[in-house]
Structure formats: structure tokens, C-alpha cells
Length: 272
Image (cartoon, rainbow, N blue to C red; front, side):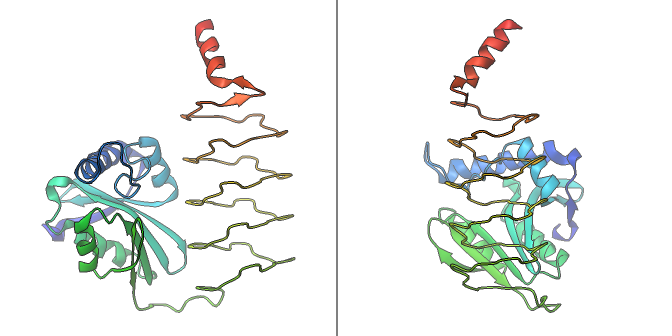
């Protein structure tokens, strides 16, 4: 059966089916490993049961359906933030088919599909005891362990890395002035207290970043998209928000010039 496994690049038509399977798998994992009220982002990834999240991942990430003999049995989501480097953000196999070799074969095919990648990473929860043995069985090594386990697999390079790559460097307190940095990719980096001023950053992509306690001022952020972003307790002051659209957002506690948006919505709905 494993020989019939194939990866299919996910499309919009697959959103519902992939989301339903993701919800089933991660809900069962939570029921098995988490106590009531307990949270773990590796056991229940953000938006694991959301069609909107699946739409985002299909649109912006490398998302695949895993099929066996024409039947969808799993999914995988990858990010490739830099040349030669990739992360398996999430991978899931239907509960009744786990432990039968489908996951191993899926990872083998994922790696085969990206021959230029020499460094693979993924994270899992230490609570999921079987995951440690599973990833070790496909050649991954646990490189650090805190509240989550980070696994890494390094392969022989099929192509030489570009001479522009800077890896495992310390740039603490560095200053870059009048530089050309178009197309730069930054990943797995600690850049707390970063100060960017007088810079052209159009078409910038920021994914899986923590911008808490940051200041964005005297800046243009037109036509930007915020998708699955946590903006709670943020303040927008003296800003042009004309044409801004909120879709499927949590607006609890949101105010405009001190007026509750929730109350405004209630009044609006009553008026209708």
C-alpha cells in the first residue's frame, strides 16, 4: 500500500476535506495527551480546525494532501524560508492508518520532492512520546528540548549554497547603513529590539514572527494583509485606516475613540 502514496499540491477545492481531516486528527491527539483546559500548540496547531487557516496555508505555504490509492489520508504543510532550508510545520495521517508506515513514506517523498534542501526541521510536543521515536526512525535528531522538541535532519548538499548565505552568525548591535538588501530572507533568528528606519520594505512577508511590544510609526502599510495575526491590546493612533476591512476577526474589547465596537454592532443589528 505504501507504494501507492502520493503527494498532491493542495488547491482551494481541497480546503474542506483537508480541514475536516486535520480537525479529526488533532482533536484526537488533544483528547489523548491533554487534560481539560490544557493547551499545546504542537498537539493542537493554531487553526487546525479552521477552513480559513487551511485557505491561508494553501495560498502562502507549501501544502499537500497525502493520498493512498486515490483516497485522502493525510496532509502536510511546509515552509521554505531560505535556500537549502525547510520546515515541516505540520503533518497528519488519519488516526486509523497511523503506525502503518504511511507517515514515514510521506516524509520520504516530501524530502525527495525538495532535493535542494539540506536542512530539515520540525517541532513536536514531548507529551507525544511516540513522535520522538517516529522522527528518529526517519533520520531526525532531537537538537534541543524545552517545552517542545526541536528535530533536525541534515543531508548532503546536492548544490553548493549561494555565497550570500550567512548562517550561525552573531550580529548583535550591528548597524547596516545605506545597504541594498532586496530579497533578503531571515529565519530562525533572534532579532529582538530591531530598529528599522527610512527603509523601503514593500512586499515584505512576515510569518511566524513575534512583534509584541513593537512600534510601527511614520510608516506606510497600505494594501497589507494581516492573516491569523494576534493584534490584541494594540493601539492604532492618528493613523489612516480608510478602507480597512475586518473579516472573521475577534473584536472583543475593541474600541474606536473610546466607543465599544461590540456595542456599535449590537445597535447596527437592531436597526436592521
